[in-house]
Length: 349
Image (cartoon, rainbow, N blue to C red; front, side):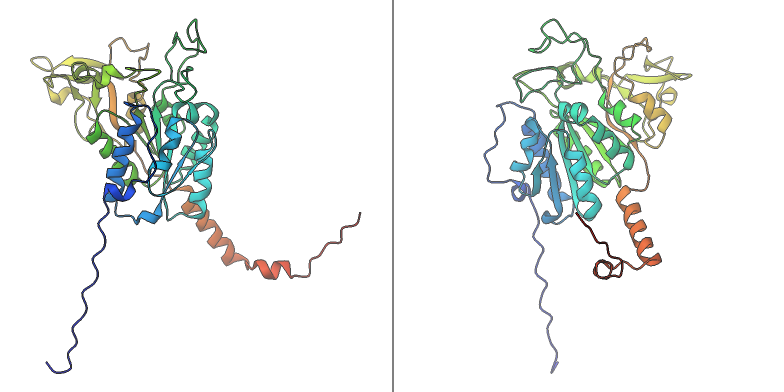
């Protein structure tokens, strides 16, 4: 047709890959460290989230995990000991559109940073916390940490630790975290899935990652990661599905009243008799986080991995910005006029 114009094709948006999130920095962790796997899974997952690369921010504390922002080609900050959560809170409050990831270790988050961690969780900032738990202080060469087991022999506890350890997901649950999950460095597909779920959650997500320190605490989680033992020791949680585990998928968790017990599937019990996982059930999620060598439970229970709870609560930054907007409606907000106003003070020596 005469006079018709042909629209120019829109330029194709660049498809991000793991390579786009890999920095030019040499990765400096001990050979065989579980941190390599966690880094790899982050580099695979972040490009798939549909977020512009420049909108990602990774903030870390002190410890071996603290180096991760250097190896991710995103905005980031290697902050100070225990304060990554506090810095991330300030960033999210002022730049709520950003995807903020907090990388921290069990010592960094649960010792000097414990106070900041619980307050971020209760405030429910829309951030993603990745807690690398290796049950040791690795960067400072092998002292016991807040998650080390009792009687742990280390350089700082030559006669054995007398501290009672934290269960990180139980702590997060006590702080009323809205998303609590657990994964491990040696299960890449599951770890990727948990990172994606963490991102999808609107609110503070807490993902504990069992991470092997092969230099100072090698094999701390071998019972859950080893091919021969994990089938009987690891319980993978799936929303709406019965709690089943075992090499032949022949074991399950049955509730005898409010008491969980391991049962064999067969003539006496079927899948209809098993506990069905519900991520919205706060009462039962509290029970699940206690599958952690609980002395009140007679049966030896498998350790749960997956999402314990995924709950809704308004985020801090949304409520903060709503308050600011309301304040502006109710009273003029003009800093220049305020500074130039009639209210003045004379300060004399």
